View 1: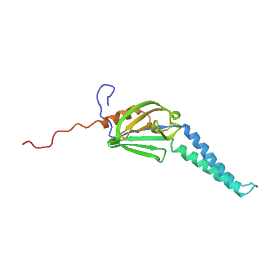
View 2: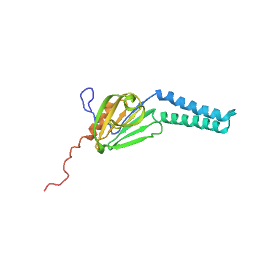
View 3: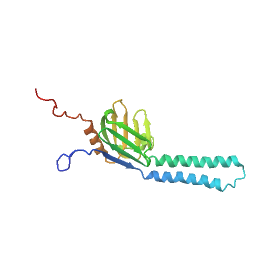
View 4: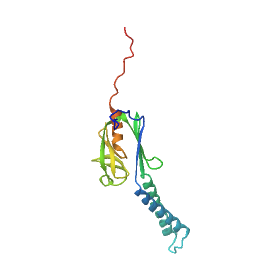
Length: 184
């Protein structure tokens, strides 16, 4: 890596980056509101049409709310970690879904200046046959990994250019050191 004064500085042992989408907090609030509405229906059951419609409404509201709540919280942010051996992607607050890619399986990395949820079909962990797999939590810069099996993996992350440089530096073959064989 080059410093702005022209001197070369070694890449860090572990590079970390992340991307966050604050808009999804609003969607999480909508999910929480659905759960609260379902609970309120269960507690204040003044329905006179019977127990079955009430149970379906309560279960439906709570299930839809939990799905929206956990679905959005899982993709509020993504964290990327690159060390000497692998690249690890973790999503959300509990780190699930998670993907670990050994650098031995990576053949290249590219900077992508404009990754958008629209191109991938929304936020989250996505797969499209013509594009590969992606973790998209917001629009903006990202990186594209080219894997040895022909697949691609795209990740939205802040400072993606630095991540690409670190990955490329780790992919270069290491120069052999001096021979440890004794002289005859």
